Image (cartoon, rainbow, N blue to C red; front, side, top):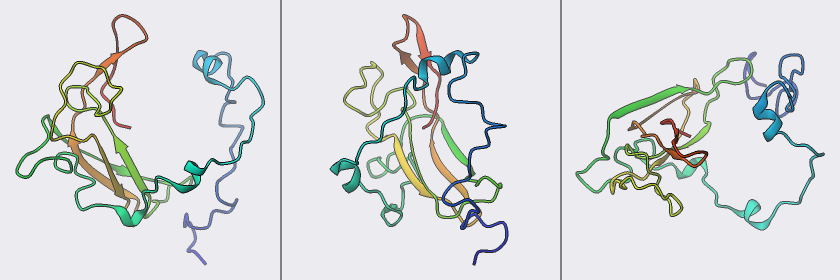
Length: 170
């Protein structure tokens, strides 16, 4: 039996029910983005594929010592990622505002120049050989987390001739 206010045994099952008095419907014509992004037809259910059932798996036991330090987790010995160093921190809270202990967080971002480390990133900014751009951490007993990284750079976005995505972390 969990203590009162604990997030370990929610009253409504695995998730709280959506409060339709507070949450707008997914399709809201007065909100232009929802017109383009909302489903226009009934949802379909598909069986899981083999890759969805088998992996990749990144469990809680697979957290490395430097996984929450993007400044050093990909760097060569004695070197560091290039860029302004920052600490990103916060808490994971449930629907009641109670901290969620042991939540696995994964995060990724572009380097200080705005370049992601993947084959399809065609932006001309240089890759930082000491920056992998991804990390993981577990929340503490109160739901708190922190990770060290560099401030990510903005990068061009192909919506128009001069559109840019602001610096952000996923």
